[in-house]
Image 1 (cartoon, one colour):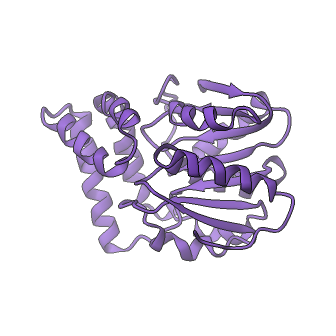
Image 2 (cartoon, rainbow, N blue to C red; image 1 turned 135 degrees about the vertical axis):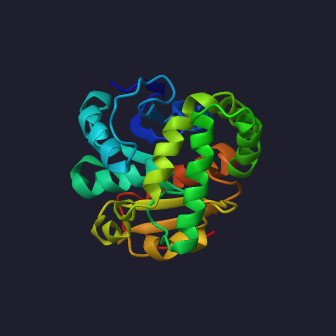
Length: 263
C-alpha cells in the first residue's frame, strides 16, 4: 500500500514524484493551489513513507500501482502531475486509461528523449554511482549532495531533505537508472495515442532530461501546450509561483483543444 499526503479541497490533482523523492515535493505547490484543488501526492515504494514492495522500479509497474490506488484516492478523474519517472508513469497510465484522467501536467518527464550510445554511457555511469551509494561508500553522501546541486539548484530546502536520505534511497536510484537504458524505457511511441490534454511544464535548466531532447516527442501529443520555467528538474519546486499560475491557467483550458506554445 502506498503512503499518501493530502492538502486542500476541490477538484483532485494526483501528484507523482521523481525517483528518490517523495510526496513532500508537492507541499509548496499545494499551499499555492489548495484553495481550489485537493492535492493528493503518493510515495512510490521504498521512497518517502511507503514500504518497498519488491516490484520493479519502472513506469509500467508504477502505472499498475496507480491503477489500483486511484479509485481509493478520488471519486472523479483527476489531473495527473508527473515529474521525471512520475511523468513517464502518467503517460503510460493515460495511454491505458484515458477515461480515468482529466489532464496531464508533465514536468521533465522521462521516456521522451532518445537514448543513443552517449546517453547509455552516461546512464551507466550514474547507475554505477548509485550502486556505490547502495554499498554505502564513504564518499557517496558528499558526492550525492554535489549531484543534487545540479538536479535542484533552486530548491535548497527540499534538496537538503533529499540529500539526508542519500544512502536509504541509493538502491532504488540504482535500479531505476539501470532500467533507463533499456528499450522499454523509451515511450515516445505513446505520445500520439494520448488524447488527454497535456501541459509540458519543463524546468529549462535540466541537465539530465533537457527540453531540447524531449521537444520532438512532446510535439506528437495531439492536445498539448508547453511552458518553460526556471530550475533544474522540478518547476513546481524551483519556480513555484510561476508554475502555480500556469497550472491554474491550464486547468481553465482543459475543456478546449490546447495549442502548442512555448514561453
